[in-house]
Length: 106
Image (cartoon, rainbow, N blue to C red; front, side):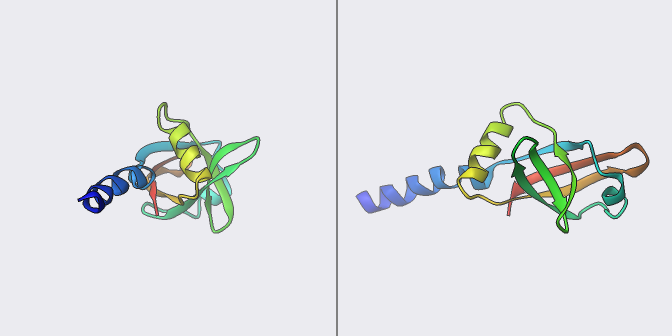
């Protein structure tokens, strides 16, 4: 019975980082990179010292992930623990430099 209990509890705690998902926008987007993107493109989410959490496409920085209260600290904690995240573009307004993404675990 204890084995069964452990298998029920472990996934709940182990999957909290994998279940983290939220929508946000990119700030300070790089126009030249933004122009190469389209909706549904997948961006890599990384932490860069002195900058914060950024989104990249083909090794090029697209922009800085706008902090979402109650989500950003958890995102950084999970990345530090080894969870890999992606940002899927949900809307794109290139002329106005707006890129919305949904962040989720890979």
